[in-house]
Image 1 (cartoon, rainbow, N blue to C red):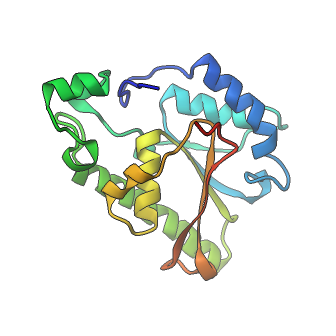
Image 2: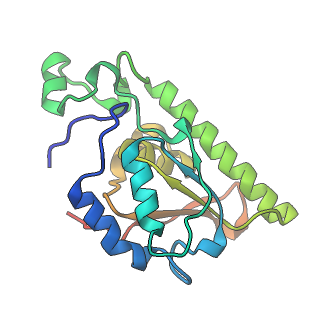
Image 3: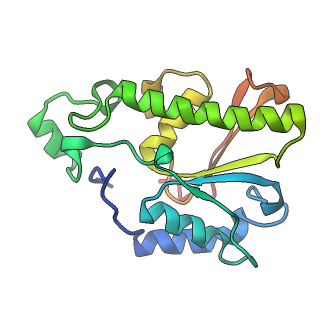
Length: 200
């Protein structure tokens, strides 16, 4: 599948995407499921309509939708001048371009993206510090975001360099689980990748 870069563009979730989420929601969300509402402490959702729709579809089979925060902190990588272009079009303009090393002119550089994701990780760590050390809140933090953001987040969560995010294929409709070994904030772990996704 060849995809255009859509970061700032507020495009809707595709009909296929809606079907995927609706089919998987009862498997993913519910008592004893990977997303158990009673364990949700805080939820961050990208304000792009496709992410917000995904969030609501995940929980629509339950009596109520969890409280959540729409935040630009978890938006997709800003593709700048490359917004809406296919990779082949970008390479025609800038041969050898690699988002993981070059970033996006007029959008977010690699350093910009690393800083934004690292700040979000620090926020999640602080939430969990309060949970582990002070007994505040509930266990889980849910983030509903986008492909490149999620891949960078996973890589940085486990203390890898940003560019290693290229090796984590985050599939649509899947759930990834990040945690800590021994409940230690300095031992971050990747527990699951692409739960319930259609693996291509």
